[in-house]
Image (cartoon, rainbow, N blue to C red):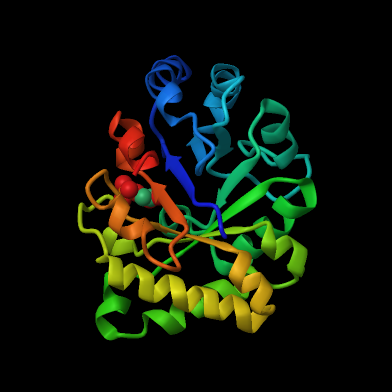
Length: 247
Ligand code: PGA
């Protein structure tokens, strides 16, 4: 049985002071071990958030890092820094990083390799644009994203990776994929993993859906066979997140 994983992606929101306030509102009612709960905060908030979450079951992640170990990379943060500050997960390949910051498949592959090398648990995002959805070529596109991200990733590392399927047209738009649309692609992602590794990896790897998940649609989405939880943006900044975690 795969344990659901529900992650709040705060994106570029909340100062350390505000993070403290939000966590104090959410933490008691999100403190469960029925599902894995994750707050994925801006890296500047990690130290504060780690302190606030001490003694809870809630896990901490951040939204980006650079694949080199250390050195002259002005403005970047390393896996070691994130881990030392108290986070264990990292999002890789979010469509906002791919689109706004021009991260390509090769960069995302390097980050996935580095996350495993340095001991961060990655949440790898994939997902198509509205244009590809309408053209009908979205599955081939997503298959390409997954194959390229997992190049040189071992079976054990694959098992330690979470995949998030996030159709770009559903992110921050209020337009959620229907549960059938989300299930169709999550199932397809699982098949892709099976082709890359084997059935046991495909059965064990956790695949989230993301894109306008809210308290009203979480139950239906997370009830689908191949959807193992969600990557939640907007609704993770509100008390609504409590209802998503306790769907
Ligand atoms: P959203 O964002 O829930 O606000 O649509 C999801 C995400 O981008 O991870």
